[in-house]
Amino acid sequence: MSTAQIIFVVVYFGLAIYAFQVYKRILYNTLIKVLYFFAVISAWIFWVMQQRQYVDEIKPMNYDLSLGVLGSFFVLVFIASCFSLIDDVYRLFLLLRNWLLNRKVNPTPYYPERRRFIAGVAIATSFAPFSVMMLGLKKSSKYNFKVHSYDLEFPDLPQAFDNFKIAHISDFHAGSFDDPEEVERGLKMVQRLEADVVLFTGDMVNNLSDEAEKYIDMFYRISAKYGKFSVLGNHDYGDYYPHKTDEQQQQDVDQLIDFQSKMGFKVLLDETVTFEKEEHKMHVVGVQNWGTGRFPKKGDLQKASEKTADDDFKILMSHDPSHWEAEVLNNQKKFQLTLSGHTHGFQIGIEIPGLKWSPIQYRYKQWAGLYSRNQNHLIVNRGFGHLGYPGRYGIWPEIGLITLKSKLS
Picture 1: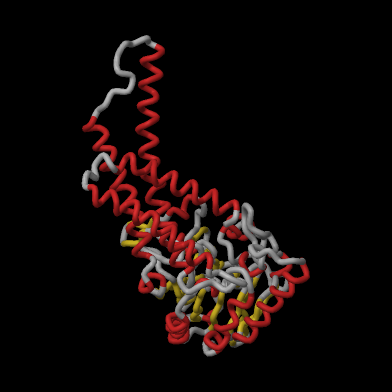
Picture 2: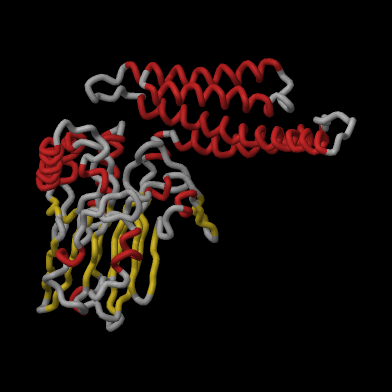
């Protein structure tokens, strides 16, 4: 194992033992205690077995599943450890207070009712996300494709493009799939939308272009009257893989662009494509990845839109939604609709009538669905695939159907 993996194992088992200090206050049954450690150790062994089969960049079939299971147990013991830490800090506070006041009393009084209450809260709080994460690992969860429909009205949409339909997909992450038949089922759903154009907003792969090759024919079978267009996301540049040279990395990017061309996509690298109908025009502007924080700022919005007039009707494809507030909204040129992805909606969250929540909202203001400001709209796709955590729950994989309407119609 690498140094990082050794550190993780030490932390994982350290947290498991520390978490047990709070669990044992309410779990009196010896069998349950034994099962706790058996499950914790089994999750680690499962991951180790898959790790040893990971040879020459070829992932074993259950590698992602093992990561998901181990990650779920890590969340379980981490949250419980936080409660154990709170209790220990409180007891330490009492010890210091009594020492400073020279009190001749038990410095760490034992309150069984309070400690059992903390244990109960710890169990409930840690098992809730653990259960959700484990449920999200089911195949029926991560391939639970949902069509999200958006009807948007624009005062400046050319009348000729009234009821123009866009199929929007994003974050395919080809390297994460373990069932090509389920992937094909999802892509057939895209075809059945019979959209006028198909727009893909980046992250076709996780790390390497080879991941996408097996899906060329599936994408090729998707057709649209005005064609299919895509942009690159942060993962498409191979920055998360240790390439030997910059030239090798660029060759892999070029191969990914070639694969997407074979899929039927025109990859827009800071450029514009124009649709014409009945002497009216509409532009699709595609920029390379541009994100705030540590994400690459490769896109050039000015270059991408240089062939468009300020008030022309424009659809912008930009992988990272943080680009919208950072550069798009205050741009001299008006971009009536921006399409993004990137966040995956964190893959876990709550979306029910009246409540929409995910941990990703504390990182991104715009993280899933439709956002509007001064007649400018942003749609953040929840992603077709998954990455890291190999599952979904509550935030299902999305296929977007966007219908443009003219207010003059």
